[in-house]
Length: 219
Image 1 (cartoon, rainbow, N blue to C red):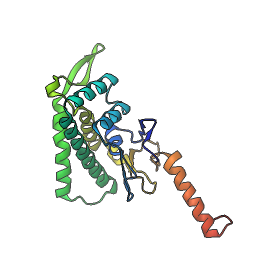
Image 2: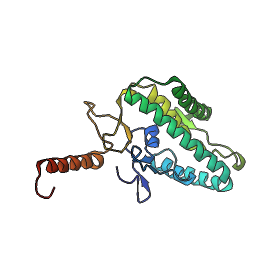
Image 3: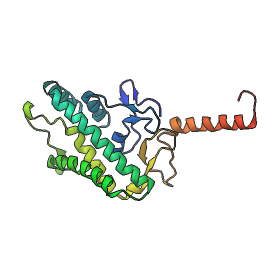
Image 4: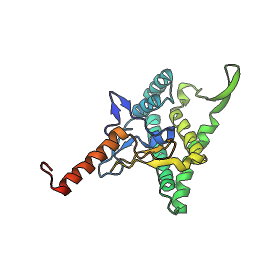
């Protein structure tokens, strides 16, 4: 899986916004996970990279965050709480294990709180002679919509949880990786967040293990 950032960019391997958001923790299943959303600006960078924010929207939110640093910190805290709730919900779905009703209820409540905010900002708008959905980010500087990067994440999670594709959400087979993705392969055989990364790492690990087991020179 490597580093999530390369020259300031995030690796996007989940297939949908909510899973890309879950994947903003690197090496989640190890003793030393890496947090990639350490600031509100990181959240904006991720939103821009994931295609959820236009460049001018990112710049506008960054200016508003400068005017309201406490609001930006609160939004980041909400973002992390939402991310972990989504992670736990999908982890249970992937495992197919009996649900702890109290834990599931708490996580769904966290998601539903953000979903309620998001849907309150969703608008039907004209689009090229037809109509489409758009987010209403209007508001003056004193009521900045600093939480707008969370809206499409909450919507994405709700849509995936109610979609037939829920059964195609998988956990990367790479040891310690912890990233999740929607398996869109025709035969449902995808195992890795990226076969060139975690897949190659696992193949090398198995090759070295076979060499050690055979006592081959250089093992």
